[in-house]
Length: 197
Image (cartoon, rainbow, N blue to C red):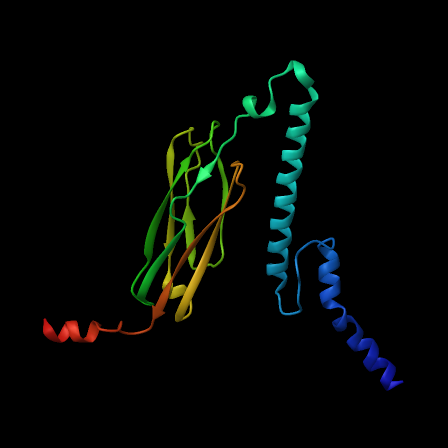
């Protein structure tokens, strides 16, 4: 009887990974038992968002092709926004963990024929804040995404943080990366500078 009770107790734990994978609809997300519920929910939301964008594009393409030969071709009549990030990574280098916030602005361009609308910006850490233009960016126009990194809210050591940008751009999701090395105490070489002054 004790053996049966132990098996029944351990049975739900052995299928935890399979249940989480089944909850995603068997999609391309690989779930292991070490992922937190929040990480699984975030991955599910991202996958649903990508599926929604693909469905919308498919609907738009079907609408464009229904007219047949009497309408201009879909390529010539389609107006699309196209987000271009000339620089999408930045390395802060060695920084003091208790030295204050670090700010970096990333410039983007709309190289499409329709206004570009940023829908949302998702950061990978609570130590990052992002601000972006809420108004549409006209074709040929530029905008800035401001990233604020708060090293005191993160652990010491190397960091590589990701910011995801969702918009109506035909390119879909864009990714910005900030990285560096957060150090407690003095930076290397800083001690020698103080003695010379």
